[in-house]
Length: 485
Image (cartoon, rainbow, N blue to C red; front, side):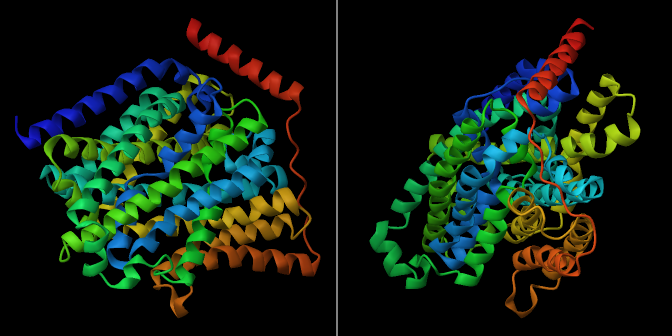
């Protein structure tokens, strides 16, 4: 059996496995609430691994290796920042989000800032998630093209269709279950590639002799870039749709906190391994396109190990895309379709829309992916957009009297074009767009605070146990009616 056949067989077996899991979980998506919440509660470790799998996509794996190929091991900070962000989330925000029990970040912000902010936050979050999906498709297409020898454009289309369809089948529960498989396969794959890359580069001595010393410096990318990653990446994690959505799948505040901590335990070492692979690639393949740093090291493996690595990288694509599509479709359902086009609350229409929106959110970024190339840059532009929302999460929970509702709405309306425009202008004056994402809402809210005009935000009110029980009972009744139909 040839090397290609072994790799293809392992990839096909993986795809069949996640498809089977999605089919088994499809009953949970019989109602709109079941589709977006998963229909049951899960242990903290399961949700922690699920969130880690969401974050560790190809844009994280290949993008980190790409950055390390050029800038050295310090590129690991881009994933390390996310791990730090989850620690902050676990300590300061997980309990509060769980008490609110809102399935969308926009719904949580509405509690404090009103319906206008909800819609603006939803648009910002959807734009961010679709940008991340674009970066995931770019890196995934480049990887599959290099490893399986097919056209990069077709690789993007194949990934888009497959990764979207299995989410449509089973909804949130299938995303949780399949991402447990994905994270195991991803970690196994990255470890295999890292160990092989170390020996291929001649061990520490070979790396040390072949590369400039800055490639092994932990601050090689510069403090400005590291700070931007902490602001955009770390801040984005406690204002991200699929993270907030995941909090509704555990049954108490303590488990919500623990889930965030479990996630950080995966992200930080994973980032170090991905960056290390990029450094080794700079030794072994010094003249390749930086985007091929990780794929080039996979190609050098034996057929069986190559199969493990390729399956892990494809799992990275599927795991991230599934989280992005379910998050985007949930926002479209809750913030636009239900209040404006399904006021009667027809469950069949809601479920149909949720499935169609999931498919659309998976396929729309495919077109953009055919023209994008800077994986890490696009990924952190998306995180910068979410960092704007993070400002309001902090204010909502810890300083709701600061600024005003009107100021919050103006801030969000300005942040999206300001951050994207700054990025397209090439980050003038060396100021990263992540800082613009933070400064824009802070400036507007400070002006609103000093002027004393506008309506103050209200402290978000947590659901009482009685209210939560009523909501749960209502959801159970809806699911029961759906099953009897």
